[in-house]
Image: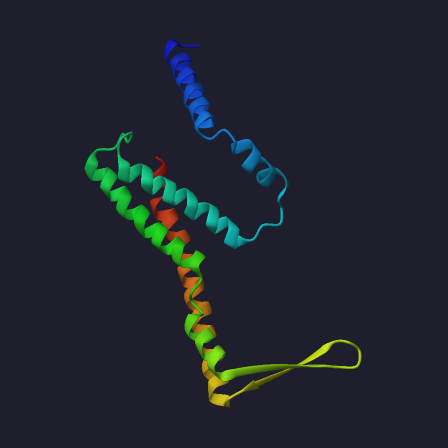
Length: 165
């Protein structure tokens, strides 16, 4: 094995050791999730990615240990900010806000017990127009949510190499 390869392996082991030392409970926190949790949803996956993007944004904004020249580093900061903004929008999930306002204002639910111990729900709308407006707003919100998710992953794909190169 060449001298340069030995030095590289030595430095690599040191960097891994330093990462583990700074995050001592990574095995306790992540190994069970990675190994055994086969039932997480897409929202949780986005939470993980956005969390990592925020950590990376802090690292690049700080700039102390970056190898990039400042101009390149600042471009990375701007692209990470946009990715974090899109991810935060997905996590906040306020796309249905207007639809819920219509729902709260115009839909009324009452519950009546029946003989078998179950309750019968009676759902009434103030008007058919209110129900139609709610359905339209919900459909628009669903479309916007999907477009935002698509844009988020497309943005990651387009900037992947600059962030992790």
